[in-house]
Length: 289
Image 1 (tube, one colour):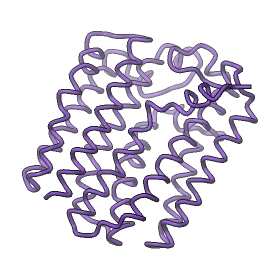
Image 2 (cartoon, rainbow, N blue to C red):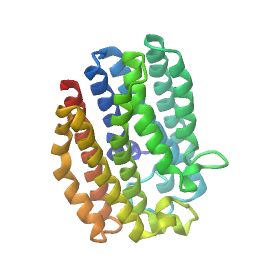
Image 3 (cartoon, helix red, strand yellow):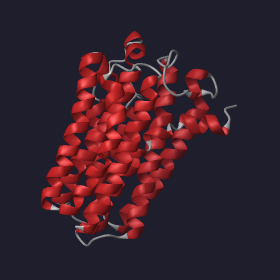
């Protein structure tokens, strides 16, 4: 039986900033448009967190069943390590998905029932990342889906749930946060690139190779902050997001200097902190604009 600490580690808390940041930014955009509503904002946050935990447990289950977690550099996996049975982890994923669905129904009831369809597609995307007969995470498509769902869908959906309109400001603000979320996945896959290649898991890092993946990671971070500056040219308070830029230095330095294996766990943590702080500062800046 896995311990509570192991279940917490299995939920992969270092990835949670990818769920929190877009909701903060979407809420900041709603406030900038005088459409902030507290209850939908809280429900959107619960949906995002529950989905992130669900996808982490679902990945643990699917990768464990396929045997692709047998030789991992990163955080402990519940199924791969034998700490929990596949059934237990599947149940945990199901509970998290159920929480996300329940919160999503409440959110739709307060805003628009179209959000039910968005939520259903999000749950399907979360499961098929590594689950199902054709997992897109094994076909170098993970970054595309992360950008769509942790950038566009999460930010625009959060704003829509409060303003009941698709807002251009939310679309613009979704892009840099989506890119930072992609960077989080890229550094994660860079850490596991050799193990993934050995078991036939074709992530983007495997296809690009180490050197190009390191350049891609750096480019994602750089472009994200260029876009924050561009948003700030129209909404000056949004320039607060640039205050997070110093946090980019340690993980980018680690990646560019060739850090491998366990060293990249620190870069993953740093990228998560960068994503979260950027999201908070950009959200505050938008709300003040």
